[in-house]
Length: 179
Image 1 (tube, rainbow, N blue to C red):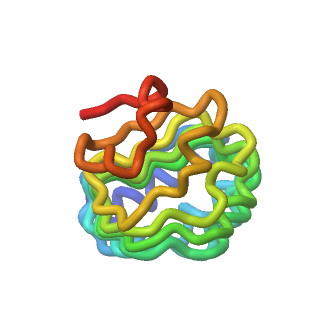
Image 2: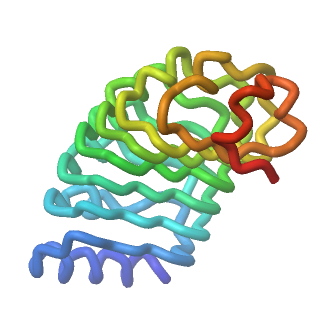
C-alpha cells in the first residue's frame, strides 16, 4: 500500500465515519497526518509496516479503544499516547520498542497489554496498579526483573517464557501461561 492509497482510504473512511481501520503492509516509514484527524476511530491496527514512529497527534483519537502496532520499526512511543483515556488494549508485539513510560498508569481502562517480543528490559513501575489489567504478554522478553506485586494482582493472566520463571513465586504460577 502506498501513501497515496492510504490517504485516499483515510479520506473515504473519515467521510463515512469509520470506527475501525486496519493498515497492513503499508510501505511508508511514517503515517500520513490525515490518519490522526480520524476522531471517530475506535480500533486502529497497523501491521507489518516499516513505520518508525507514531505521531504525537495520536492524542486526537480520543475514542480509540484498541491500538495494535505489530511488526513495525517503532522503537519509541510518544507521551501523548498515554492520554488516550479510553484505551482498553495496547498491542506492541514484535517491535524494537525499548521502554514503556510510567505514564501507562494513566490508561486506567487498559485491560490487555501485549509487549512480547520487544526490546523492553524493564517494566514500568507499579504496573499492577492498572485497575482493569487482566492480561499481560511478557513472552520472549529479556527482563532484568519482574516486580513481585505484579504476580499477586487479582484476575491477571501473564503470558511468560519459561526462562522468566526465575522471577515468579511458585505459588502464583497457576495464573500464568508458560511457553
